[in-house]
Length: 147
Image 1: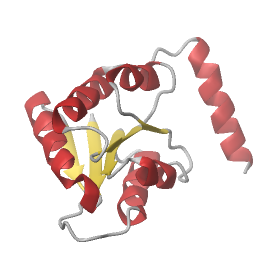
Image 2: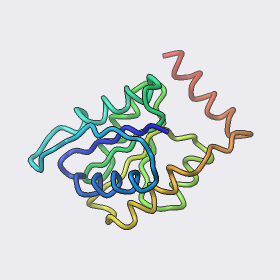
Image 3: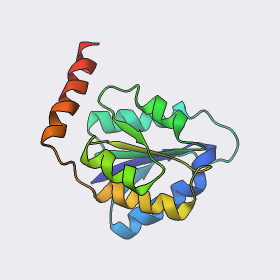
Image 4: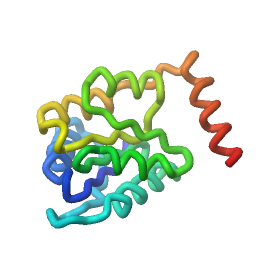
């Protein structure tokens, strides 16, 4: 699995925690920034990650900002992206099992580093169930392709 990861200024600390987790898990990743704590624009980080995942260059993406909201909105504008904003372990599992989410968004100002690691670990290791959920994903893709 290859993961693209990025944050804006509001998610740097949790991004570093998640990179450490992926190192421990032996997951290959590329960090797309940002490298500063001064204000930056989250779409400048969310959109490149989403494009890399949508193109198949990366299998999944992880985005972190202050709340996760801006990153998830921006990422979901890219065709083929199913970015889930998650702040609990149950939702992390469900969004992989039922929604086949390919990008995880989290908010550093909403959750702490310990919970972020738990969420990311569950999200990274949970497979898509397919079955009845597959046709729902296909409906979303069909709508997306009509636009």
